[in-house]
Amino acid sequence: MSERTAVRNTVADPDTASGATLADSPRRPDFEQRQRPLGPRLLAGVGKHCVLIGLSVIFLIPLVWMVTGAFKTAVDLNASPIVWFPDKITFDNFVQAAQLFPLARYFFNTFVICVLSMLGAVFSSAMVGYGLARIPWRGRNVLFVIIISTMMIPFYVTMFPAFEIWRSLHLTDTWVPLILPHWLCVPIYIFLLRQFLMTIPKDLSESARIDGAGEWQIFTRVILPLIKPALVAVGLFQFLASWNDFLGPLIYLSNPKLYTISLGLNFFKGEYATEFGPLMAVSALAVLPIVIIFFFAQRTFIEGITLTGVKG
Amino acid sequence: MTTTTASAPSTRRPGRSAQARHNLKWGLVFCSPAIVGIVLFTAYPVLRSLQQSLTSATMLTPGHFLGLQNYRDLMSDAGFWNSLSNTVYILIRAVPLGIIVALCLALLLNMNVAGRSFYRVFFFVPSIVPLVASAVIWSYVFNSQYGVLNSLLGKIGVVGPSWLDDPAWAKTSLVIMSVWGVGGLMVIMLAGVQDVPAQLYEQAKIDGAGVFSRFRNVTLPFMSPHLLFALVMGLIAGFQYFTEVFVLTSGTGGPAGSTMVAGLYLYQNAFAFFKIGYASALAWVLFVLSAISAVIVFRTVGRRVYYGGN
Image 1 (cartoon, rainbow over the protein chains, first blue to last red):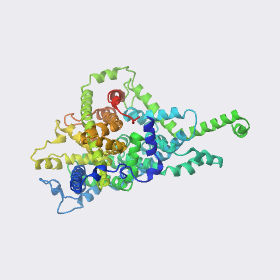
Image 2 (image 1 turned 60 degrees about the vertical axis):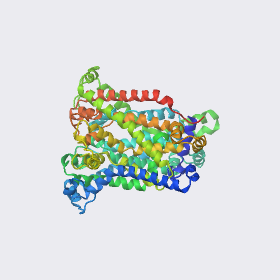
Image 3 (image 1 turned 180 degrees about the horizontal axis):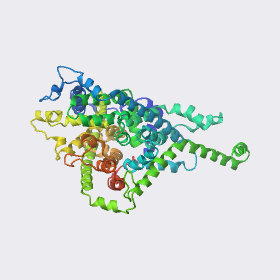
Image 4 (image 1 turned 90 degrees about the horizontal axis):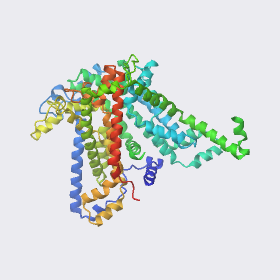
């Protein structure tokens, strides 16, 4: 067990988190290749690439299919045998989708929910993580265990009573139930940030205390800047989670003006199930921001997953 | 309070307790979001849901006390058993398959290949596509007439089934779709593969161990915590499987109830039929089932898990 903790702590080190990624820095020199002559080495290399390219194609086909589908005419979409890359690229699907589907509104709605949830998750998890990791108070371990064990309780157990609470407050059919809980407690992020905070030397807070700083000042001025990489990871996670959330909006929102992309897309699919063109166009637009964010924040993302996974 | 804090440094014991009180106060202040959140959105809902499962509550009326009647009704409800068996069917295929695919991809990506960060992105991207969007994409991929899957199968001379429209194939379609989103698990496996000590591989190689033997005796033992984690998480997530089916079948669980999973059955009872008491009982049964299966996995598979070399 102790070894696993040690491993966890080295991985959770904020310095390495901002630096090279896990997968890009091979820890193990490839002795196998150094020993072999050029011929077999080349052959092995080609073989590996063939397997990887083949698998990538399988994984990417549905996405490529969606993106190209968005630019195909109805004739090309329903052609048999299938047309992979159409001769004629059309934007009609997007035009049609924009007429049938209040794209701008749904994007705006989703964006507001995502940003507000993200801010809440980052701030509250950092606060609670600080309270658990850096202030030695009686009961903090008990609270930590409680927070961790709440992760075991499935969403469907707490779903209706939570719904009742919001209904009694007349807050169903608003965004509040989709945002506010993230300002209170997201156990997995608390867990992750607590790990990060434990790795920061105690002396740092002590010297700030001697200089007369209060807890709040230490938290905001000293600690928060130090754990920025972890905060970014948590923020990305929450943004993604809110962007992908379906059940939450499905339960709470009934006014179409408040719909998120996912919810809108589902109803759009229900109504235009046979018109794949506009459906593909809207789906492509729903995926686009996520893919863009991922490409820019790839490292943080993957490190965050590894951390919150087995190690975190 | 303030006077104690001010006079604290003079003697030792009050100083200590003042410090403790100061820490307790700030600890509680910093943890207050979690305390409020847990009381409001976990503790209260859990107790309330347990209580409701013993009543005939609907969405609008509190109902009256029934004792264990809801649970008894569930046991004689064919719809419940169907939804449970569908869930288990999907679970026992999708979870192991997902783990195997994730492990294979991780092993491939751990080799020294140029451009592996690109490959990593390719495998990972499907897992971040919003579930609703991926359900839309796959409904088209699975389309029996215009879909890309049957078209590709046709090229190798296989006449594909009508996937989502065929009760015999609908669940398999869902399993295929879930394996597509295995990227997150792959990243966890990749981290595990990279934790395997390099010297062990070299030693095994010197001892004449082949590729398979090295995988069996070096990689697998070191990966076993990751595999156990994936198995337990997969199990727990499997019992909550919902969104994909809801979107793909427009909330019906069709064709012919073949994809009516427990999560969807629960949702229908609660938000379509408003039977909150009954749905709560169902929620608790699912919770207990997933907890029991997680414990069984820990007891059986967990024993073989190897933690570190000392």
